[in-house]
Image (cartoon, rainbow, N blue to C red; front, side, top):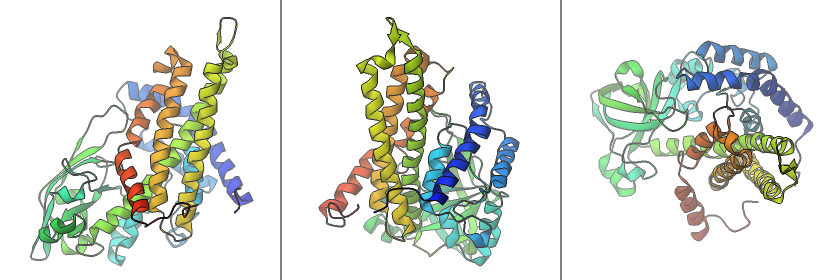
Length: 391
């Protein structure tokens, strides 16, 4: 077992770190000001400018296959890159990428949706969650009924990331009610639906800066050629999309926590009470030590989940562990760091309170803590995974 990054991986990590330090972190005060005043964190033009600079650095389509103009660095490198980018709250994403399930499209769908998304000409979102159905997919209500060579979609989706900005949505709907009621998994299909086909979105205000959308489909007619994958095979596509998102949450938590821990270390050395730096007090030293240990543990859970995927192996069990532990670790670290900063940590002059609000969401979306625990325990109790097998 080799537990060190290769020279190439270290070089990429350092390059991304320089990009974050030079191009993104200097924008933090501007982002905070924009958000306080109700403006977008970053204007679209600024995002494109940053993506162009990243492309000049050699980072475009990090996980996109080379045949589509990407770098195809693999999941391990994606995890490392996300950890570095997440050391800032500036909402930056690298260009040249598309949702993993879009690659299951046929050639015409790839030409119409995948390629424009990779090129930044279109934006997509994925919609499965409904007002009464999150992890409980058996309670899905949205339907798609065949009418000639079209499908008619009716229903609502909620808490959809990117739903307000998307040009098209990959949406899950029931196409066989009887089959769906049997298991809660079968009988659903994924459709690619352009916004101009008639669905509407509405912004959902949250305690964080993240603004998801509610989507409404009222007799939206979708041509038969817009079925993504197989009829009644949408559940597996949904699992693949969510499975990827889970360990990514852990990677983001690691990056945020490393930045916050360094902030706590620096502050504790400068801040003095009763004649000496608070860094000399055990009450400050212990949360710093605990945070360092937990960050390192989360990091290896994430890297193991990513490495396993790179080997072409099933990483769903590992992804659930990486999300569960990583999300909770991030919440503990940001809480400790806010406490170390005292009253200043609670103000909006520092980004700690912003991260505090953002991190709380990680324990909810893409599968709650409770769902991850259910998955992990079920895998062990039913013998799908043996103790020690996932090392």
